Image 1 (tube, helix red, strand yellow):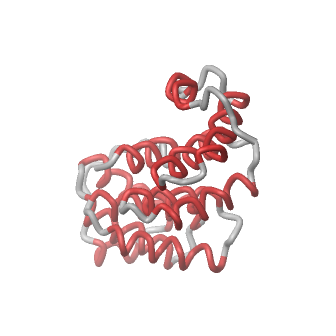
Image 2 (tube, one colour; image 1 turned 60 degrees about the horizontal axis):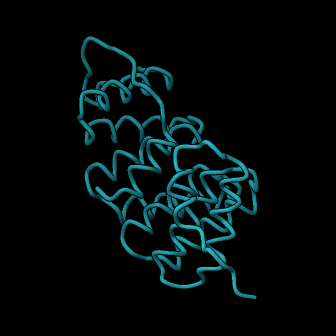
Length: 186
């Protein structure tokens, strides 16, 4: 899996699974509450059973679970199963209804970046920094996408610098510092 996906999913999902004794097939989960479906999905994720976890995440969404909390887990499961297009499609569908969902937008941007669609990645990252200008990791991700795209080094430099302003000792500070242009041309 590419570094960009790992970065995005570690930073954005960061939810630990709970511990259940056993997980019933989703068809047997019909009597479970939304919270219980989420608990089963988290346990399945912890065990590495992404496909089964996807079923429970989907069922929880269908029953009205908060998509901003559940959808990142579902997208992560799709990515682990290398279903990138399906993950992107689900994220795009969600963003049509909830355009200010920066968590999902960041996940979508990282998906685009992972499949080398830098123009779409840059577009999504730009939307995130517009919605949340103080989100340091979004500035760093946008800068890396701009560098990967091979264009607009000055704009990338601006976002590396913004990241360093917001997170001077952040996890990517050393990399951002190394990527700075030594001299910015007007």
